[in-house]
Length: 74
Picture 1 (cartoon, one colour):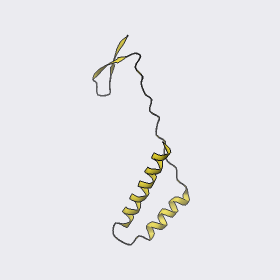
Picture 2: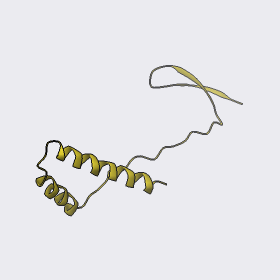
Picture 3: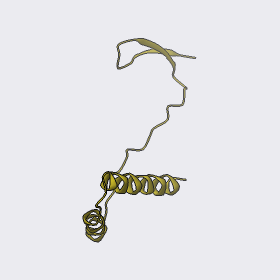
Picture 4: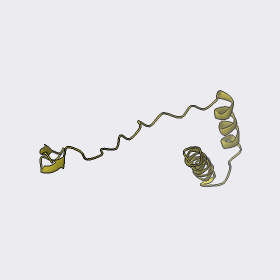
């Protein structure tokens, strides 16, 4: 078994087996939303009158998007 030394990003040396399986992580892709979705959020934000209502709206939407994305990756 051949052993190589690799230098990590912080400069430390690590021993690596030549046969070791290195996992390649796919690059994240940007999400795209329709113009209608954006207009719907803006219309809903216009109706927010209470303190913190816009923040709650954005929090709720971000949570829904995150949940939807995690289900798509399964």
